[in-house]
Amino acid sequence: MACRVQYSIQNGLRLFSSSSPNFHTSVKCQRTGLRNSKFFLSKGSLNCTCRASYATNAADPFVLTTPLYYVNAPPHMGSAYTTIAADAIARFQRLLGKEVIFITGTDEHGEKIASAAAANGSSPSEHCDIISEGYRALWKELDISYDKFIRTTDPNHEAIVKEFYSKVLAKGDIYRADYEGLYCVNCEEYKDEKELLDNNCCPVHLKPCLLRKEDNYFFALSKYQKQLEEILIENPDFVHPSFRLNEVQGWVKSGLRDFSISRASVSWGIPVPNDTKQTIYVWFDALLGYISALLEDNKQPSLQTAISSGWPASLHLIGKDILRFHAVYWPAMLMSAGISLPKKVFGHGFLTKDGMKMGKSLGNTLEPTELVHRFGPDAVRYFFLKEVEFGGDGDYSEDRFINIINANLANTIGNLLNRTLGLLRKNCQSTIMVDSAIAAEGNAFKDIVGNLVDKARQHYENLELSSACEAVLEIGNAGNVYIDEKAPWSLFKQGESGFETASKDLVIVLEAIRIVAIALSPITPSLSLRIYTQLGYSEDQFNAVSWSETRWGGLKPGHITAQPKPVFARIELETDLNNATSETKKASKKKERQKTEKVVEA
Ligand SMILES: Nc1ncnc2c1ncn2[C@@H]1O[C@H](COP(=O)(O)OP(=O)(O)OP(=O)(O)O)[C@@H](O)[C@H]1O
Image (cartoon, rainbow, N blue to C red; front, side):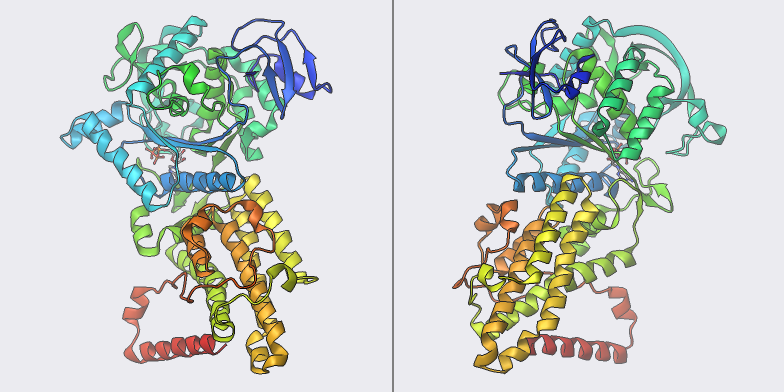
């Protein structure tokens, strides 16, 4: 099998622009270190023809990762945000028919964990078990379809970290030295004085950085300055969104400093090979989790076996707080170890509260479990993915949350389905009377739906999740306009003369909603399943659906839909209802009743 050396060979990157699809060069092979290997271009990647122990599968899986969350405290809405986004991307890729390996997990070593455990009167490992399980439980509540959950306290991970460390050491990129600087305990990194606020406060955690002097092992990041500059110029796709690429290029240009990769004072960690007085520090530990997660059960833990199970990652999804480590430190570390680089790093923005990053250290977090219990997983997923432009920051407000969810999911989509199925039941015994493809022949609405689905697909592919939601919602809006204009309830009243047109119109709207269900399923998987079930399909049929089925023409004559019942209940503000006088309560109940009657009558 060919040995992939994508992005990461020192001087091979220029070859991407070669006009020849197959050529021989004197580029150095990553694995063997030999020159004169044979290389060829395939699917945009530079591949080496030597027999590869670091080979990736021919049909590359789509490997995507969330950060490994630090178990210093339970998860919050910020941690959930990255994971929801990753899940939407994973589900979209699966709809496209890709084999997906979706990796998430927990980072469990370090000073803060040991102190948090001591504060609770538990051992570090007991503490990690509890918090890590909290992450898994939340992912279940949020319908997160991860494939691998890696914990950095896993013995297999430890073996990978040690092997990686030894490789980088053998390359001559690790040395021991004293270091003195201003250190933010919460970021767990030394800071440049120029990036700090007054009193040397960390701009993220608003706490003063401490002057620290350490005798540590260092990674020679500065050696990779030129190669990183080249990679960023020649692979602008490596960092997304593009404005974050500029940030990363700025950091690299301003000069890279070697960074410390061990701690003498921390015992809760993986010991440095050949120096058990020091433990390995976060980046040489947690980042390796992306590789060790790929290990298959019962296989010998080695870099070679892990890498051959799917590396390089297609996408690292992270918050902008850890962009530097993923887009600068990590590629340099991988180059040093002779391992391919990930294809893309996407740094999204922050969920904020009063303008400040929501985070465990500041304690200004929003409780995701509470939101899920009150509003359900679909509402939480949809709101944050649609309302926060992916890449930028976004603030949460409960009023906005309720308004958006009611308007988009309950009204535009849920109510459209419910009223159309109600009409079909009343007039056509819940039966699709005509092939949806024939019903929509020459119909402009069908073309509108087709264009919007294509748009949604493009947005998903470009990781523009908010725009993908918008495009799908537009189908719902167009469906509402269509049914209101056509008014099939009036046509049915005309008897036989209006029946054919009216029943065709119902099929057209239901077909559009079927397409909405698939196209929105990466964002709202449970709601999409409920829509599919209402349309008369089984759960197995829904689970087997692919993106190609967003093509118009799924509903066939004779197909029977289910008894209509609301797929998404409107959120009512309890406080509003409680505060209302009994008179206004009565009035609003009457209004609701009238609305329902209108829907049933329609
Ligand atoms: N406010 C937030 N908005 C968006 N994503 C966040 C937010 N907070 C955390 N994350 C996600 O979690 C990652 C950081 O994980 P970590 O476990 O360190 O959480 P944290 O709450 O930021 O911790 P701390 O407050 O101690 O820095 C970020 O890169 C991002 O993926």
